[in-house]
Amino acid sequence: MRIGFGFDVHRFARGRPLILCGVEIPYKLGLLGHSDADVATHALIDALLGAAGLGDIGEHFPDTDERFKGVSSLFLLEETLNLLGERGFFLVNADLTIVCERPKLKPYKESMRQKLAKTLGCPPERVNIKAKTTEGLGFTGRGEGIAAYAVVLITNAT
Ligand code: MG
Image (cartoon, rainbow, N blue to C red; front, side, top):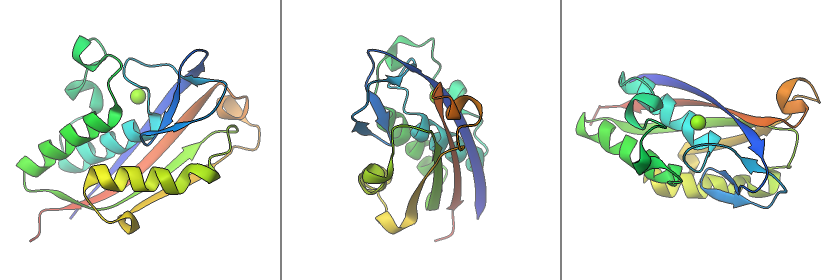
């Protein structure tokens, strides 16, 4: 058994879609980034890479690489799973916390969970999504961006 932790932040920008865990969420602002800027999936990828001792997302999917421009982060997640699979690791469970004041994410949590579970190839019960605010404090409270945290457990036990 191995544990991994991931963290990411992206700033809001106009004229971009807001995509979290592969789900497009209707909002006046999206997130800025080289890929689709799916901050929650990025935190999850870093947690998986960390658990497997494989460094971080920037090493595997650099934002200077044209191949990853505008790409769905679910594709990067699939690539990450392949890296773990090659080493005999598979996911036990994942727990994500997404931090933003707006939009309210509650109506989308279940579809985010389903989307991630499908990409991870695991039952939805093994994926948990939590949405939090910071009660108006800090950059998330001021609506400048979204932060995400992820913890995963992986195993190579058969
Ligand atoms: Mg990122």
